[in-house]
Image (cartoon, rainbow, N blue to C red; front, side, top):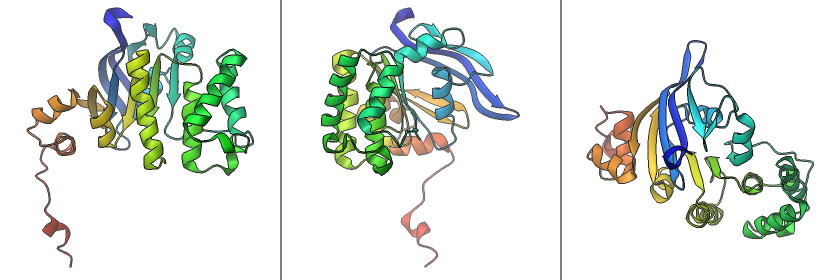
Length: 258
């Protein structure tokens, strides 16, 4: 990994016909940090993650993940990364235990280690009593926990998490946040989070980038981003950066219809 960088991207762009999903994205993300890519729906967050995981190819530009090229070393990237998509797919005719074991087998994790990790994840996410129930009967929040467990089963060096606390109750969301922080602190993992939830970015991220309509508008430490636009908090900074002309709307404006 050049200069201890987990992810580097140079002029990454993605076009679907005339539609620009990503435009000249440049990234330098150090190992052992949590990077948060913030932006509204359709901003280019998921496209970025798919390119960095060699799921789709860029229209132009290039990138490396853990020193592996996204175009020529796809197998190495997928072997060393864990991806939790925003809308993960599950085999609903499998139990939680069977599904996580299936994913572990895909990554060639030794059987004894798979079972040990599955037991730990089921206990962590309070799924032990439902471990042998079919996933089709799980709630959305429970499915999210299973998907996160499957993402972690092969102990990846980099985690790509697209809205990791989606559908989770506050207690479960807290557990996920603590897991992320613990992985970085104790195991020096790198985490790339896509979210539009600013509280996650403020609490977890060492570096944030704000993207909109395919363009990375700003990047830096959360406090630096806030200070750069003379905002009082991250929410205010986010709104100013997305719409510099925005001056805010008073409650009276919202209630003018009454």
